[in-house]
Amino acid sequence: MTRLEKLARVDTATGLTRRWGALERIATQLPGPGPALVMFEIRRLRALNSALGHSVVDRLLATVARRLQEQRQVAWVGMLAPGRFYVELVPADDSISQAAEILEDLREPVDLARWVRVPDIVGAVVHTTPGHLDVDQVLRDFETGTASASEEERVVFVDEEHRSSGLRRVRVESDLSSAIAGGDVTFRYQPIVRIGDAQPIAVESLARWRHHILGPIRPDEFVAVAESSPLIHALGDHALSDAIAAIAAWRSSGTMIDLVHVNVSAVQLTDRQLADRVATMLDDHAVDPARLELEVTESAVLDTSGLWRDTLQSLRDVGVRVAIDDFGAGFSSLLSLRDVAADTVKLDRSMIAGIASDVGARSLVQTTIDLAHTFGMHVVAEGVETDDDHEVLLEMGCDLGQGWLWHRDLAADEVADVWTSECATESR
Ligand code: G
Ligand code: G
Ligand code: MN
Image (cartoon, rainbow, N blue to C red; front, side):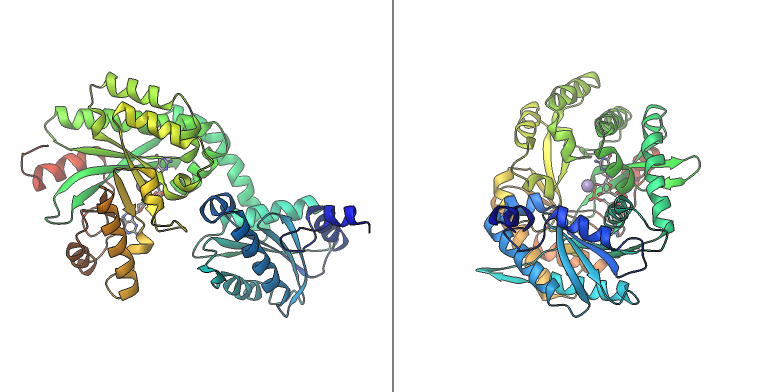
């Protein structure tokens, strides 16, 4: 191999064979049966890069590559794309539990001047069969598997059932547009309460879709589908106009809700016209912009390469409030709070889960609350389920809370009932 050929074939950060070499390698394993084929994927690598810097991420990738090569069952490692490792496991028999163990190893903190962890790494395992002829099918299986992996199931074994869920995605995508237009995507509202006296003051709007054949589809699923197409803008506008109409209707019938929160996808923030449309919707319903708060997920806000800064600024110019959603779920640094200039930070429920029993979890939440207050932000604790959580949050000076301890998501008329029974008549 010439030096140039070597450069083209080998990834400089990790020394691993790059995409074309890895694809050739997959082809040699087909048709099966052969080793188990696995892809490990570090998700949201772009955001990691902007949070940690490219050179730190390169060293992180090199460590992951080395850890893979050190595994007993690993016969070959290559790189399908940055952060996407192709691995062969021999023997194939217990490959699923083996892959899960390897993944736990990969998640161990890495010492790169400071300790860095890869929080969001997942895997997909494929067993080639004699019928399996096609490299594209293996790649599609890797995609299906890693896309459906979750915190509870980090390693997914891709079989026939998963291949048909690829078909489910096609179905969801093709029906979503008419569901939005036809009013089948509806919204429920979960109250947000003051920690001090549990008095509800705001609601978060949450999208719901009951498909005529598939039944209820979770928003995580259809929002993700919408995000990969222009549909996210239609869905987003639907959510915004529904919420603005709802708060206008509540208030005009005497239910004095102060604030409605709406989830906004990072993709919506790439739309330069968004702020203008929001202003028009508010105007149409004569709603004060300060009664609308947009929740943008932490990972989106962290990705400094995005257009979101301009759009967020335009929205703030309209007078709309901004919240950082799911804070603490990813690898955000506390200082990113300062850079965003949000009104509110919502602590992810994974951060809240341990506070009643775990001193470490408690001090992390306390530090975040204190820092948010220093930057003039309100703090909402998400996923509050127990009286113990509530008590701890009260002691820590957390402002607001949301969770099943107080209220699940409700229909619009149920929201009005809650306000009637639980709120004094005062309004801000
Ligand atoms: O509603 P839960 O009950 O299942 O919501 C799951 C996820 O879906 C949450 O992370 C929430 O932020 C997101 N979500 C719910 N409704 C909407 C919406 O209208 N737009 C966007 N972008 N995300 C939503
Ligand atoms: O990511 P976002 O914060 O928008 O997600 C809101 C999600 O949290 C919804 O799926 C909602 O149903 C869920 N949720 C709200 N309260 C609780 C709670 O107390 N416990 C749990 N486990 N989930 C909750
Ligand atoms: Mn939210």
